[in-house]
Image 1 (spheres, rainbow, N blue to C red):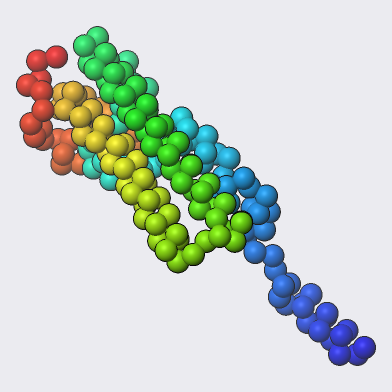
Image 2: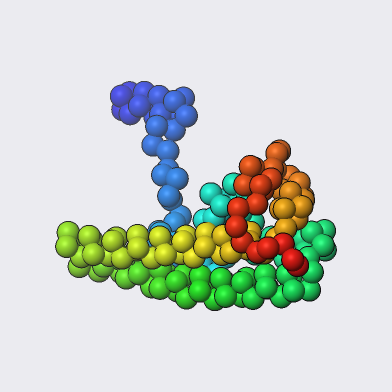
Amino acid sequence: MKRLAILLTAALAGGGAWAASPYAGLEGRMIKSLSAEDIAELKAGEGMGLALAAELNGYPGPRHVLDLADELRLTEEQRAEVQALFDAMRNEAARIGDRLIAAEAALDRQFAERTITPARLDAATHSIGALQADLRATHLRYHLVTRDILLPEQLRRYSELRGYAEAPASMRHRHGGHSGAH
């Protein structure tokens, strides 16, 4: 009895040696690896930070360009082009997102039903990885095209409006794309 009291005292004094896992409570998710927010963002074709390599290196995305359309003084032609890109990107990303959700659900189900094997695990994770790569490439690709629609001054202003400390070199010097006759 004395030993149990000592163990309990030590556990309480030690800040809870038997602390709960940071995953506690997640076991109730429908798909364990995806939150409800993750699923909603994937279904909506949201960016989820997948295009930061482009965004932070001078390749604006269509959504943010549309959000700043007035401040960037987009022409009607530019607005229409960027809107078309945004719609296409979102549709493409949502289709891939639906496939990714289904693949994650299938993997989760195999674990839940105890039917997972090393071969099934390899196949499922490779499929999920390929879908994640496709989703990221989709978002990045639309950043490439969006950049070419904007003029150098609009790129500089975009960087300023987004709060980036200094416009990346790629925003200061135009490399290809439209002739600037917007």
